[in-house]
Structures are given as structure tokens and as C-alpha cells.
Length: 157
Image (cartoon, rainbow, N blue to C red):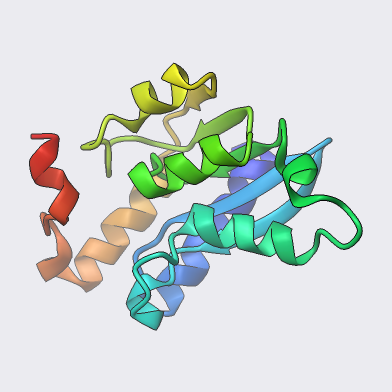
């Protein structure tokens, strides 16, 4: 697994270790990780704390003298799972150029690939077995979560 996807996977494992759904993301600009995060909505009760949003928040907190929009423009989001509609919207809004997705077998219901690509974001989908195994580990530990539907899922079935 390439280093930036491995960094995102480490974030996903950190979420799993806290009892959260294992999705991780890192934001990379000019070859450097500028933000990292993992899904925390189970841990916090805040439904906006998805991995990609947390990575964007982390980058923003490190922005210092940089204008945030300049910092994120043309950056790449490496994520272990296909971003949802909310995260895709943030990726589009803040001008990231590329999303590298470790795997799509765990979540692909919203067809956000076409949403992202339709707004000029390049989407590179991989088939990383370690990321799939981490999600399966979550479902083994929390079997009632398998197949749980989100409110938005009914729009895309």
C-alpha cells in the first residue's frame, strides 16, 4: 500500500480502536500530509465528524499564515472509503483536485464518484485488501452495524 493510503488506513484503525466506524483520511499537498482524521461520529455523537471532514479541520488548524482555501487548493485527499455526499461537497468546495479511495466495496451507495468527477475532481479508486479487512473486523465486533441504513441511502437505491 502506498504511504499516504497507509497513513489513512492507520487513521481508520485508530477509529476502530476507539469503537468507531473505521474510516480514515489524510490531506496531502506537495507531497506532505497537511491534515489527518478519522470517523468520530460514534465517539462524539456529532454526525459531521467524518474522516474527510476531520482531515480538512486538521489542515485548517495547521494553516497558520496560509489562507485555508489556498492551502487546500489542488491538494489530494487519501481516504479508506468512498466519501459521502457531505464530505464530497467539502472536497469540491475547498478545491481539492484528487481523491484517492482505498476501496469501494464497503460504501458506494451515494454514487459520489460521479458527483466529484462532475465537478472536476479526479477520483482514483484502488482495491486495498487491508482496508476491507479493517471494515470486516468492525462488523465482526459490531454485527448489528452491518447493513445499517443511513437516511440518504434511500435516495440512491
